[in-house]
Image (tube, rainbow, N blue to C red; front, top):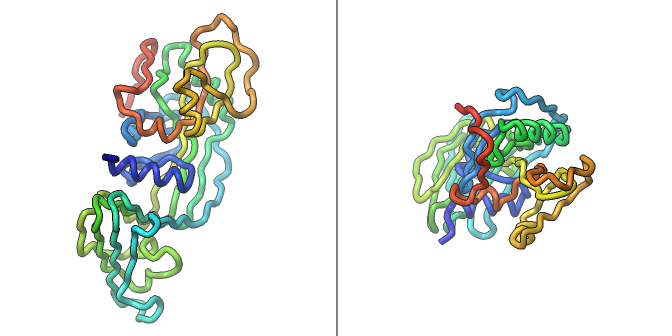
Length: 284
């Protein structure tokens, strides 16, 4: 049986082509360093705390994100929008028709991105060669930071969340997200996760990881989930431009930086890559 974390993270990746953590309330920041296991990110430290410099690109506006599992989520209110006094109270009910069904509303989103990834790759390679970086570690390189946000995930069919909200907050195309500033949960049935964040969240991200490369050139690699099928045959297909030049063909432990995929996010600890050469990074 597919787990709720797998259903949620897969659905978000399919819709937005970004990774999503379980729980959806996980706080992330550019340069966070940690481990992935079973759709979770466990922060250990950060590039800043390790003294590894990185640049930051200008934030890019993403606007609003509005998604719900097709035909499996219903939102109902007992008030007509805009018809009541500003200080009146309404009841808002969200119901779900299958396990793992998701409502995702996030307003005022911006994309934060680390710049100059080749320089970061060079810094991590140097630390790995000096036995100060393990191949298990991933680095958060992109974060979608939101304004008022509502993320609801059903534990089972028939799940329901009822809210008492300010009618004035039920505005626009994101009624649940816009109501988070003034809301009270009055009924909660079969809900696996509810994130009602009036001050925003960091629900979507991308990350990179150093990977071993047997021979020849190394380059910054951005793998898609489709590339995982190729990995099973032992061939790592690189995409993107060659950023580094030719390596020593006799070098057996050369590394490259690759984008973390949804399949990487879902791996368990027993299948995680290991690097016996490097010590653990100090963590919180």
